[in-house]
Length: 540
Image (cartoon, rainbow, N blue to C red; front, side, top):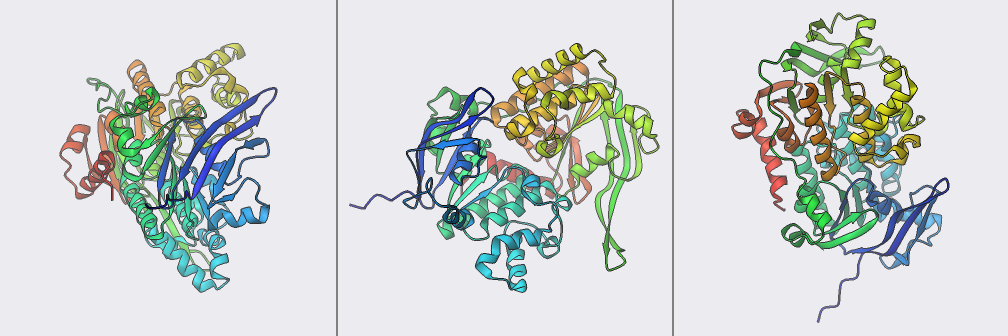
């Protein structure tokens, strides 16, 4: 008889408490699970269910206010809860590594990518600069970044959201850990890169015997990648099963609700003869490439290259494409956050020639939800102040009591309670922060909402709530949406028209059903094929 395989990681009755003002919050309540060598275990559940807190407690990365208790946390048979600081530092990176959810806040903004990769590599490769640079370039290449040598000298803000996420994955894999903790590792990535990253992680797990703890709300990714699933709700594990069993016959009502929350393919009805809200014609946004001591321009990055579109009141235009294709830059250009050439008109106003005073008025009518809510919300302001700020700036509600009523109403619409008003952004999960960012935009009752990956940080059940809310607002108020997303399921659920971008250019556009059912361009066909592979759960 074969001896049972000893677990690589074993957690027994883990509880994490946070001491607040007059109350104690149990974020994790007595959970137990294990991970075998080479196994992938997925931890899924709603935002705020305790998934990330449980993972951070394994590496003891929680703030001092956290009280961690457990009957045992064992890695390769060693108790980690009593490790000395030196032993714990050695454990991090070499034995256990983590990919964090929000790359812009996890990467140091003042250091180039090479220096940050070198910090992860130096203990293994010494201080030889040539060896370090070669290895760093290889890591970026493994994670699907094109022209990795040139990216080594870039700073985080010069990369797209998806490219920053891939840099984080490269840093985590630098020293080939035995266990990789991946907290939403593909949140910021389009479907083609998602497929590449999942194939990469699957291959590394097979070749290196690496185990993985996958924290995600993306159930199709779980179906494709994981061996077992632990479903968390309100700090507790409510169901544990193999992937095959869980998807075929979920037992817990909460698990069944999660599986039923995938977006449908029914956008709101298209309005008839609605007035045009936004038009662009041959819009171009090019960034200079400067080199040498005198910083001469040697070339141009054509982030947006000749985009023409029309958006009507009550319609949604979905913009899809790979990371770095120019989707977000297009949204920023329409907001006049980037210099550009070409024509842009909003409700009869020429955006290119609008004065500062005109733009101030227009920006109440054109709102935006950015991709990374943590960096777009001020860490020094309470949620109540953040939501009231726009009302005060634009003079929409001079009465303080009425402003507070509007704040309460919008919080309820996005699924947060009134107790959130006195808290700060860092006290919320990633999904909750995204809901706050959406509330901040919606409270001003805009005519055009530019949504840059508005549901990328949300679990499926909350995503369904937000999409339902967006559809209701669109029908009630005739809102126009420019919806930027890598999630083709969300685009099909929301968009009346779809525009596909590649390398700054529009390669295909048309009604949603036409583009999804009969894609003409090879690149569109590739995107849809990758999305289908993820949704059907084919495994390598």
